[in-house]
Image 1 (cartoon, one colour):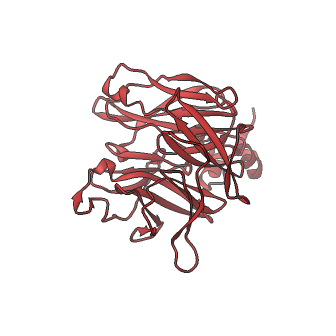
Image 2 (spheres, rainbow, N blue to C red):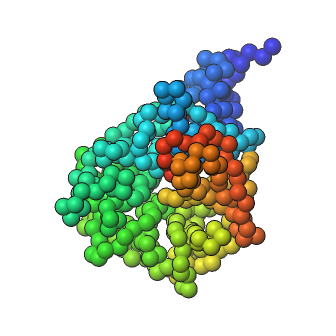
Image 3 (cartoon, helix red, strand yellow):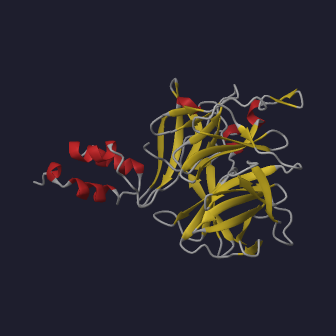
Length: 352
């Protein structure tokens, strides 16, 4: 019988780096003491991290249970576990293991759903009131995201009716607002090659300069694609070292994808993602490589599913859109009906 304890430490690290799912790594860490040492030392560099779809809450006895859909290499599975840190909160997913939560008391914090670790962020005085008018907590923040900029994590929020932009780094005692010379109404933020890019509701691309004198400041980069009108939502995403713009239309749930030409400062039509795919929810977009249940050159759109919280018997669905064929199919999510409304969001799980 093999003595797993005697395997060289470097070999155990190599084995760990072949794992895709965080749940597989948890099982790996339970093999023996030396394998768990790899887990405790955080020497795991995953070859691929598969995002989960965070669903709404449902009640099981006296406990509120949060559900996560995983489309792994071998199966589609819904994980269920308590997450009281996010109960009755508005949530936004990130690609770095955190979920950004906004409570009814206007508190913003980062929560790791697997470890339940929490990081409190500063209070922002402008969230509660706008032009001396009290703001409903749910609409105080339109979007929140965690970006990794030059190896430093930055939390950014679009807030208020005018969709202002503010950011906070770890250790900051207050939020820093980004000034604009005119109203812009932002809708999306992304990090592209260590630069923060923002998108306005009319499709203008803006660079947020966070270094050097007179920073932070906003710089105009590009206008929206010509002849494009009537979109429902717009998303920015970095995919295969390209900056992409995704337009979502109401008509038969159609998507269009553009690639940004840096030299021409212009959006160019793009119809092929190669082996990549896009994961989209109402708040943002993530690009990953195809594997397992995920098909290449497709868009996986997590619909709002508001009806499933109003009508408990209604199924929760996700739409899979083929960029090549311009058609879509519904994917049924076999999860418990939610008892509290929450927009489904994509997030990438992490163990630390």
